[in-house]
Length: 105
Image (cartoon, rainbow, N blue to C red; front, side):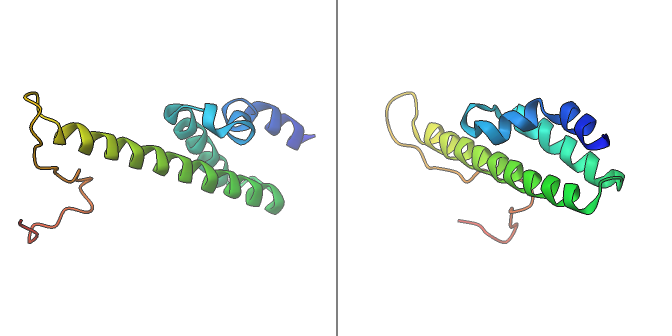
């Protein structure tokens, strides 16, 4: 009984993410991922449900990562196109974790 209530409560965005991943926005996928993490962190899920939630979380995480990578590529392209039409130097988008202070070009 608890499973059906839990499934109904989380069927919204997370169900959409499984059914049609291309139709889910980044924000919706991130919100669903946060919900999965909260459910897992609660420690209340039986093992099988925890594994299912973990699998869903991995899929949502990969979706978010791919969306962010695509956005980064778009930013790099836009930074390369100057208003006068000349190509500008493409600068790598730094996330804070991959910045290397010794890496000067």
